[in-house]
Image 1 (cartoon, one colour):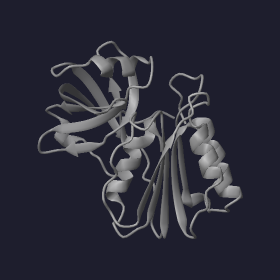
Image 2 (cartoon, helix red, strand yellow):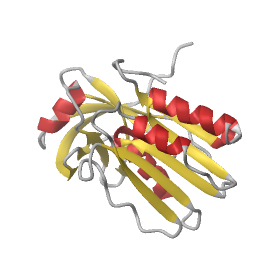
Image 3 (cartoon, rainbow, N blue to C red):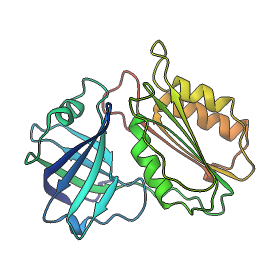
Length: 233
């Protein structure tokens, strides 16, 4: 089956804003970005550099009137997109294609669990922005250190945030998985999990079997996988 081609947008960088030592916000402008048809949180676009490298990123903010989008990029290693984001300057060009992504449903949830590593933090925050303010939410985010990628969470009633500091001697994702395997969940929880694929799968199995959550209440996505370039989940 052939996939329907996604719209492409020629853009340029108009601002580079460090959010933490490990996270940078790139603001892109383009004459067609007012037509970017974002429908829900966690939707993503493929960001392609002039050198031909590409990767999927969540749209953090979309300002149709201003024809701008924000994309938050983790400066986490030696990948071509991380290197590009670490050196990009206003005026540099790129191409965005999309958006894509399925809508996670939190309808009828009494409590929401959001769990992510740095790569999925922007997507988790877009969900948080859209959830009803009265809905209790618990957020777990694994980061490299206390200042590496931790961001202030929005002020809202019923929000509990946990920043999990990764042990440098353990694989990424393991701290998040181990924490969730020993965490009690309120009745009526709907969960959204994203990050390293193996860790996400481990927690998903735990929620479906040990906690017996219905499948339609566990949304999971492996954003990347140890030892595998351009992992697709």
